[in-house]
Amino acid sequence: MLNKAYIPYRGYYSTPFAKWQGTMANENSVVLGAATSKRFFESKGWDPKAIEYVVVGSTVYQKQWFYSGPWAAALMGAEGAPGILVSQACSTSTFSVFQAAMGIETGLFENSWCLLADRLSNGPHAVWPNPSGPGGQPTTEDWVMDNFGKDPWAGEAMIKTAENVAKEYGVTREECDAITLRRQEQYLEALANDREFQKRYMFPVEIQLSKKKTITLEADEGITTSTREGLAALKPVLPDGVHTFGAQTHPADGNSGICVTTRDKARQLSANPSIEIQVVSFGFARTKKAHMAAAVAPSAQQALEKAGITAKDLGAIKTHNPFAANDLVMAKVMGLDVNAMNNYGSSLIFGHPQAATGARLIVEGIEELVQKGGGYLLFSGCAAGDTAASIVLKVS
Image (cartoon, rainbow, N blue to C red; front, side, top):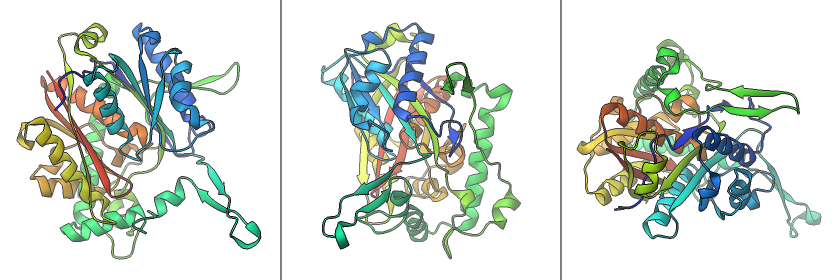
């Protein structure tokens, strides 16, 4: 259990998420993320030089990604701050926030910034030396699609791991379609009253097209609206599977930022010092080969145990759910109401730019609890390699 790490109220943001090959498709995610963070600091009147350490969470290689941490720090105005790159697939944001919180907990630094940035569009294509190949012919890798399509250890595509878990836990096609429609309904609630809820945390992203032309993306791009009849008409992705393309997420682009600092500094930086947001605990798990979605529940249970609470104590639950079965299995294992999780949206609906996804869900959960008057937040999500990570925050 952690005691010293806090997040200032409204000391965070998420950009809208752009569709695959959409508005952000040609931007270096680290450069765009740093530029967005810098604009966010300016909007808050924060001095970036007060940042002592930067944690960059990113999973898809960008040009000069090697320098991500210190490069992003300098670009956002924190030239004196070192930085680290965290890359743990879909758990990147969870571990980044925990890493920053551990820095606060141990007294290593007092003020940090987590930048979570990814661009799945136009993923890199790597050429690897292969001296033993015929004539030394190299091998190649599509950084995004090849890794979505096969886990080198489990030997299966991500969709297959979801189907394996669905079969083991008796998840049906009808359940997957129903929870997809429920998640869409929850997302639409975030759009009510001219996107009132989303505007609590969403920060527009600016794309510089030329010296004279800039475009601004203020809302999510590429959301597909489903109907019961439309989902029912879709064929499963895999033969005899329960997931269609409508019951899984889609790749996207975007970035998010979260300040992790001490209690005193959080009060100084907060938009409302009477609201406290504490980082409480972290949990992780790895399940059996090719059963990725099954790792979520044990990671969540570990985080709850370390926090000294149970699922009944939670005021909000947010999850990264790349497949509909993720939430259905987690709810079955933990005895949760699957329809009450992920209020105001989830990655199943608004897409998945990997590193930024969890951060957006965390700040959505914070804002949900602020509206409710406080409580505990659990964020959980699976990640490549049959793993998962969870984090518990307390809003008071």
